[in-house]
Image 1 (cartoon, helix red, strand yellow):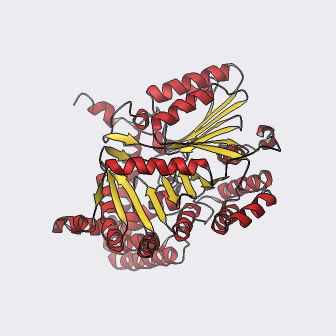
Image 2 (image 1 turned 180 degrees about the vertical axis):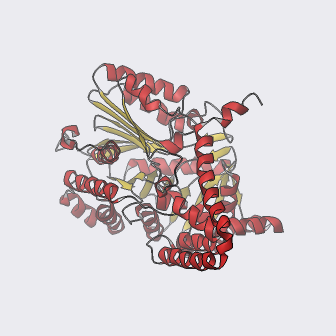
Image 3 (image 1 turned 45 degrees about the vertical axis):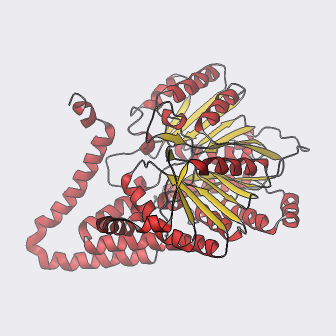
Length: 509
């Protein structure tokens, strides 16, 4: 009870209540016009079917379309109102022009070395196809002069982050979905402050929705007072707007254009198990070194300039990379945007599934899949590929885990092996195919990550980091509980009903 006033005046509560009141006002307004019911019903039918046709002819995922259509047909007023708020990827013409400038900037400053592509074609056709797709769709090139190190835990990644931050001489760029006060962020912030005082260009970009219960409303001001440039991505404001739907889910730490980190690790204490949330928290990260980091710098600067409304001399941030540098395999950092009508994350996962000949292993906190992804996994298993998926043993959201478990039955029936991490929560986002290819990044196997959020990842082929990923899987399976087909079938009737309902609307979760 002592915390009740503090809870009631938290910004997330105030903003959510304001949005809810606006939704209720729209619904109440429709009820107030009940005396004109005949005309209102006719108008509502027209609006309802216009909305349905608009959704059906759109370019979004079919399962996503179906969930919204059912909601709108069942509850027209509430469904249309909620769809306008959370249903699409709409931005204004002005913002669209700004986003187009971002894409042009990326294209101007990233060039594919064709000798690298030719060497990859001679070496491995599936890897060449993966790289060609990522280049054509996200415009990020593949490199053979860079190296990567995989971290199987948040703790090991955090220790290396602190070590590399201390070496910064020119700039430090941070872009994270979640930042929270505590041991992890406080120690990183101390380094950022000290480096900023030494003249290093330090910038921090964080997602407002991801931090709304964790950071004060004007936290940017505090960072600026410390000499750190800071911006909030897509502020969560109490106004009905479709812009609330797209969040910046990326995790990037970039140092002088020479070292870059990404992966599942946010800057909060649960990611390094300094506090316990949902049992033991297992996460992962990856360090990239060499020219491939330049792609990650471009990811950051493109969003930074979009949010800040700047047009910088981007080339000034590019360090001198040795022309004769030797790499370790092939690395291709890439980004995914919900505003370019290209589902890069989903497509590269499907491509890896189809390329796998012997094994396909996945770690993901959520397993909310469309029919196309489920079918691809089932087909792979039926053709003899060793398909395994690790999910949390202790979930962070019960309703999302209910949908995750609802997908177990068709997958295990086809031969996919599902493992739940007994010690606690899995937050790693990793895909391994044939001990040759891997993707490590921020992309969850759910609709929001695959279709609605800004994401990033690193594609790896023939890199020592791929073996490190495989070792992480080998060490994780023994502490997991396998969910067999018989166990997945053994659920109560009421659980089946609940899961069926949640599955219908799972694209909206």
